[in-house]
Length: 133
Image (tube, rainbow, N blue to C red; front, side):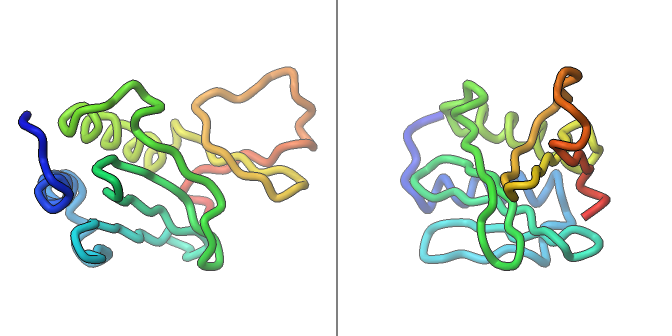
C-alpha cells in the first residue's frame, strides 16, 4: 500500500475495523485526523481503546478514564497498514474471546497476555477475561 497521510490512514483503519466489528460504530470519534474507539466492557468497568495516532494502531485499556495499559501493533511485527490491521483484529478478537487474558496484581499493574505463567503463585496475579470487566 502506498504511503498514507494521517487522514488516509485513519480512514482506512476506520472503514475496516467498523466492517469487522460493527459494534464499534457507536463508540468512535475523530480528533482532527486521528480515529479513536472507546469501547466499554459489558459491565462498564473497563474500556478498550484503539487509536491511529502517528499512523500506527495502538490498543489499550482504560479504567476510570485513565490509560492503565497499551501496546502498539509494531510490537507484533506489523509495520504496514494492512499488517497492522490484521494484527489488531487478531488481538482484539483474542481480548473479546478470552484467549488474551487481562492480568492485574496487588500493585495495580495491568498487562494482557495469552500465556499464564504456571510458576507464579496464584495470589500474586489476578487473571480475568474481558467479559469479567
